[in-house]
Length: 347
Image (cartoon, rainbow, N blue to C red):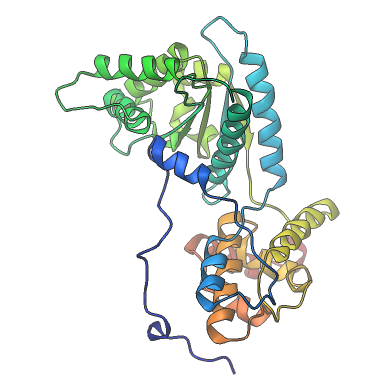
């Protein structure tokens, strides 16, 4: 029987935790400077327990078919916008349910593009900021939106500054620093049926016209959100492609192959000395039942199962261990509903 895991085993340490979300340019540069996670073989004697726990907490970013599709579409959109002199540049909207990997996709696209720009502009002497990240503030206004962008760009802002002053400063700095990609997350929060939402949507449109960059918006089920309703929504919809990132399915032969390939890629980066290769693929249907094919739930399942195996000393992921992981409410409810379906209705 597995050993009981208690908090006293190692305590709760977060003094050297990885920084949180990227909210400014310095954090973004620090994130880019961190080397991609790599590790010796599972049986390498250099592994310590803490190193194993840290490794499986961070884990590796696994590329999905959607990430590859999004990268292709972004590359094409950048080429279309490259010499476009009119203000109506093309944009992208990444949409999907919670936990489908939208924010991870934005981060990977931003990373690849900025590193590419660094190589292309290796001899450039001026300051440049190829990529900017921002998120729609919960209590949004046109002013709070540009304040978020100003914070990322390191532009000093004080309460007495007007919306126009901050907007002009943001546009000036991003143009001067050759920003070519602006990622805007949580756009589903914008309700254009309200005055603050309509005004903030207009501000977003103004920024997209004044900054010669490609705007990539992301949010939960954006196509069904108020953002794309009314005249403002119609104008945005006319300028943007919609990329939908649904949960991965497990029904057809092609879907099963994609799902099992993803599990194989995740298994390849595990560092558990007693883990039996092929275990995740062998339990692919069970794992899909637990997670519903949602990437965030899948990541949690595999990482926590690996950490549990380190703490209990088994150093191997098993079906029993996978079933012990308490997943998020969304995955738990989905799995419960699917268990109640007749066998013929299962995807």
